[in-house]
Structure formats: C-alpha cells, structure tokens
Image (cartoon, rainbow, N blue to C red):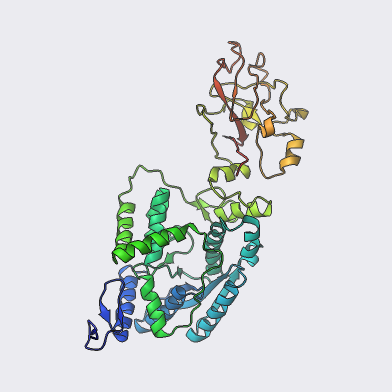
Length: 462
C-alpha cells in the first residue's frame, strides 16, 4: 500500500534518513531548504553586504551548497555577493574532471569563479607529492595545502567569509577522530559552525546539521550537475575508518550522527580551563596563521623541497628540530629529563653537552666541533656536508660530539668523558669538586643540542 506524505496527501517518494518521516519530493525540498535557512539565521552566519566565497569542488556537497546559497540569497534577501572558489590539487583523472563540473556550475548559477592550484602556490602537484610520500600519508599534505589554498584564494577575491560543504556526517567523523586521538584542541574547534575567526577569513558550515544522504537525495531529485567519483588517493585515509564506524552506528540508530555532534559540543564546553591550549600566532615564513614558529604547510613544503617528504609527518618537535627552530625541549630515553645549562658560554654553542647544574664543560678531545677562532656558532663542516641544512644532531652513527667552549674564568679541568653516544644519554666520569659542573659519577647526563636558547636531541628515524 502506498505511503502518503507526512505533510500533504500526495504519495511519499522518500523516507528521510534524519527523522524517518515519509515525504513527497516537493515537501522534502521545502523542509530541506527551510532547515538550511534556519541554520544560517540562527547562527547569524552572514551580514548584509558581505562577500562570500563558496568552496566548490564539483562534488555533491559543494554543488548543493552553491545551488542553495544562490537560491536562499535571492529568496530571503541575504544581500550577499557570491563567488565560486576552487582548488586544483593536480590529481590526474580526478580533479581535472571535477573542475569541468565546477565550470558548468559557474554557467548554470551565473557566479564568478576563481581557481587556485597547488602548482601555482607551492610548486608541487598532488601527483608529484604522492610519488614522493606514497599512499599512506598523502591526505595529510592535501588537507593542509588545501586549507591554506582556500584562504589564499579568498584573499585574492577579498571576500569576508568562506562557506564549505561540510555536512553532519563530516562533523561527526571529525569528533570521533579527535576523541580517538585525544586531541582536545581540535575537539573544541571541530563542532563549531564558524571556524577560523582568529585568522583572516572565517569559515562557515551551513550544512553542519544536514545529513549526507539527504544532500544526495536533494541533488538527485533536483537533477543537479555534480561529480560523484571519489578521490583516487583517499581509500587509505584515516577518516575512512571513522566513516565506516559511523555508518554502522547510523544503521542501528539513525540519530547517531546528530547525537555525536551534540556530544562533541558538550565535550568542547566542558574541557577544563586549566588545560593548556595552543596559542595562535603567525608563521614566520609565510605569515599564515599557526600555533608554531612555522605553519604546517611550510614544514611539509620544506620536507618536499629538501628530499625529506616525511619531515612534517608525526611528532611536530622532530620537524622543529630538523628545521633548526627554537623552543624545542630536550628528551631522554630511559633517563631523567634535565634542563640545560643557561648561565655560561654553552648557550651560544651549536653543539654542547650540558647538565642541570651551573657551569659548562670543556672539550675533552672527543669533540668533532670546529675550534677555529673560538667561534661559538661554528659546527663540524663534515657533518654539515653530510646532513646539509636538513638538520643538526649529535651521536650520528656512534660518533660523539660532546663539548662546549671553555669558560676560562671558572673552569679548572675537563669534567666529563663521553661513553658511546648511541642513545640519548652519556655517563659523566668525573667527580671533581673544583669543577663548576660538579658532576656525580654514574649520573645520567642528557646529551643535548643547542639551537638558540633551546636544547634538543633528534632521532633521525622519521
């Protein structure tokens, strides 16, 4: 027996995944559009007179977003100036075809289009990056570069805001991923309907509470022109596992997606105030927003350009040390962490063994440092040749680099001998009360490498 529409007497054409209600096509269109309009107005996403860039990839989400933004802007008189903004990642057989769809959408919706490319901005295409990094971590590069490329394109257009097609499924997947990783900082941001307010251009998500299945239904019944092929490099993405898990939950309980979003919102509010969060700043190299001295895009790009594509993958402190940045901390392997000497000439030395007591240590003859002219910033030229400007370290292949310059005013004699710098610590061999280091025999001392005012050790195994 035919099922009637829950809002009118017509025959129902679909069952809403979000609520389970039966609706005809016309009622579904009205409800769908009204809910998106409600999301926009309740969150005050836009102000009259603003210029808004629609992130357009040619897929179902961005195509429906472009259609609705134009429709609602005219219907409800938002007073917005709209642009289409696309990013060409340089993926043969995928992005080149989807951009053709975007160009057709430009003509259909009569909106100006701006396309920026990875090759133009970074000098690399994703095809070239994948040949360097492989298929395991390629999505990290693409995600970081695309976010920055959108902002750069938006700056070229001088827009006030960017709207993206992130839907409820995307937000719920991100919540799950951040919970699994224990990433409190991102958990606080991922459920926000407007992000990037601390940067140059805020980003809005009008589809935050809109199910992906309903977006597909809307595009299908409206016969919108969109590109439906998945990225050829995405099957190994970590997000795919979260998506599979979410779909399993949705099959059991249809409200799971919205429930996870609301849970993420509550968790972000209840995060303890004493939890230390990253401080937003700007990249010293490109000026893009970053919580570190260099933004993630610059670190990844540096690795690609220097033949170390995995430089920015994994723990960020390794990348900072490899790039010779300050504000790194020393680490130990199985021994107690100690703060380096900051009161003598060791501070300016490129290679030094320092401990947690005042004073410095004299070169004991095992050092491979250059001693010419007593330059506190000189380093071993052979090490430089071997490693280039990629990184600087100690204990490469068992060689010991252990000494700092002599503080002639207080230093009486060498206070330490180095034993095989294979691990992250060396044993002090002297217990001379006349030496300012006052090293205790048998105590583990931290082998550190100074970079400016910082101490760091680097494991070469990225």
